[in-house]
Length: 262
Ligand code: KIV
Ligand code: NA
Image (tube, rainbow, N blue to C red):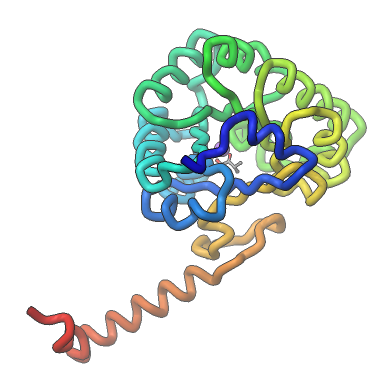
């Protein structure tokens, strides 16, 4: 198997940036498997896949269903399953729910949002054989309590907090972490302050890798493009054009033709 091990992922720090992309189904997981070092089954699927306005209402059952689909499509990829909101509020719940993920899917690790405040939970998981990817900076699961999505690292206090969070996540045994929505110079400092890879999203270039939501980077999400997203494909336009061509051909009886007929 070409699947990266935790050891290999850690070794990439300082060597070669890690490529992480989200996927929610087998079809896209298979398409992105050759390009990604790690596939994230993010709870962003609640927005990108399920059409909700935030990640809060994603359930563990949903995450397990999509993780199995992704693992089927990309059997040689290192797969991360996001623990959804409310499934790791205490050590016991976190371990019980992470075990459920490990028993019901072939996921390689789980990801949980939070820094110093979640260190005890991360340690409890890693002590019990569950690999953990941390997630610091802007935390989408806290969007309601925070009153919106706010870029982190803008003040000296926030910078200090981020450095503490990263250190705590590392010391708790996480093998890598995501840093989201953070001023680039602070994210850079955070990445330099720990020995595990720090994967950025909206956190600048001076980190140990990048993650993007596949439907954002492929241009399928039309409503709005966040500043940190680069569209590598105009997916929505291409798909809609193809679909209109099909619709026109059906209506004009141009499809099917001889070659598609039994
Ligand atoms: O759910 C997700 O897609 C994520 C990434 C934005 C890091 O957590
Ligand atoms: Na997420």
